[in-house]
Length: 142
Image 1: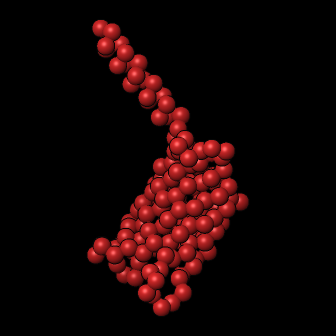
Image 2: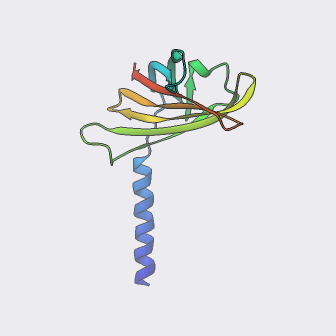
Image 3: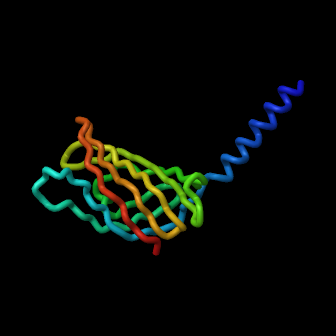
C-alpha cells in the first residue's frame, strides 16, 4: 500500500512540475532575419530573408514562408531550466508541410528565446528526397 501511495505522489508531482514548465508564447512577435547556412564550397552569397515571426493561438506564423506553407505550424514551448542562469530561456519547436520549388517539403522551426527578447534558432526546409536547407534565425521581440 505504501508503494502505491508513494508512486501515486511521484506521478502527480511529475505531472504538476511538467505543466509548470510549459510556456505559452501566444501574442509574442519577433522581427529579424533568416540567413541561409551555405556550405564553404558554394560560390554565392547566402540567401537572407527578413521575417516577422508571430506566435498566435498555439501556432507559429512566418511572413517569409506565408506563400509556401500548406498548413499552420503548431508549436510547443517550455522553459529550459538547465540553461537558465540570469535570464529565462524558452525552447520552442514546430513543423508543418508545405511546398518549395514545386516540391513537397516539411518546414521545421526550432530555437530559443532568451530573456523574452532575443530569438535564435533554425528554420529547416526538409525535402522529400532527403536534402535540407537550413536558415539561422536571429530576431528581436517588438
